[in-house]
Length: 195
Ligand SMILES: C[S@@+](CC[C@H](N)C(=O)[O-])C[C@H]1O[C@@H](n2cnc3c(N)ncnc32)[C@H](O)[C@@H]1O
Image (spheres, rainbow, N blue to C red):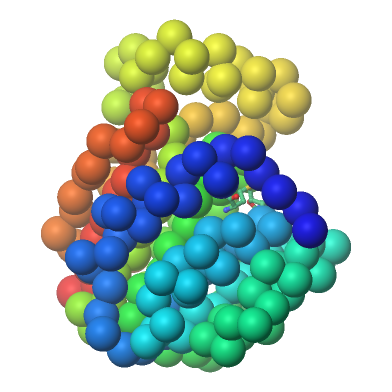
């Protein structure tokens, strides 16, 4: 099983913010499930909901299956590149953590358009990660600034995304009622609903 130390730290704070938004029944669609730590934890705490993990890197699917072993409300993982067509599924919520900065900028547009294509009316979108307020503003912390520099050194297509660009992409995809919640370690939780 693949384990991310950051996901172990942030899974409870993410659940705390997400919990009041969850419906009593329905399907929650997770993008970029990684090794499956988040989806298994969220599903354990919400047995009345169905959970659909997805991960572009199919080498991680075995880890997702292992994390979800014994949880009959977690569906087998799907391979999803957010820039490609999304599956014909109807979801009540679409969630993603820590993807926008470790993927090319086109994934942000792909994520929102894909999310809007699978969501039922009134469904929610939740995005967790580090953001910069705008291209002209300072980073939220020195740590975020160093992290951004490291990301761009690893891959020039990566980097912490600007909140105003992300908000614009979400609006273009038809998402409304934006909400921003500060999270530990200078991260943010972004939240919308489909009109
Ligand atoms: C830092 S990991 C985060 C994994 C997990 N969400 C977590 O918080 O532990 C970044 C994730 O983005 C995914 N990713 C990168 N490019 C992608 C794309 N084009 N479409 C979908 N997922 C992508 C990677 O496969 C990886 O799972």
